[in-house]
Amino acid sequence: MNIKLSDFVNDNINCLKVYFSKENSNIIGWKNIEFNIPFVTKATKMKTKMFHNKDMIYVYDVQTDGQKVVKKKFISDKNVNNLYIIGYNKEILPTHLFPCTDEIVYSIERETDIYRINNRMFIYVEKEDTIQYIYIKYNHNNTIDLSKMQTDIMRTISWIRRNVSLEPI
Image 1: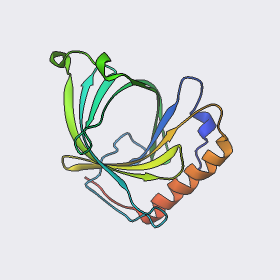
Image 2: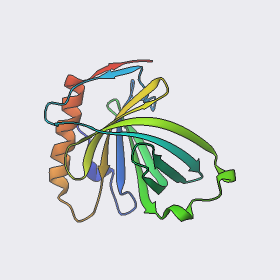
Image 3: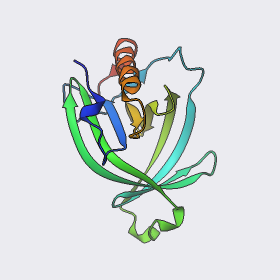
């Protein structure tokens, strides 16, 4: 079964995450994810600490000392053919807009490998404690050729399903 990007993106949604889930649910964590992407020379590796406050996330990259604040507004989600798709509106804000550290709701540390498919689409493999996640992140803009993105996302989903070993928790 194919997914159609046009069914998920609109003026309010500028970012999609397509998680590989278990049995058409929103259970997206895996015990072990193993694969090698031959068409990507190497992954970008990140180790981050993230601090959450309402709809804002302060992201600190431990390796590069990079900092950013991301504001995410959840718009919709859907389960389609063992894919859990989340659409949201994402905005990068100046770091000084993040509230006082006394107001942090929770924080996490995460290791991430990022594989570039094209300028707007990436495969993410994230490790958080003993749980791993794999998803395709697509950054949408209304001025792009959606048919090219549709082809790329379907090829990537197909490739992951054929070549990635996902060990359930």
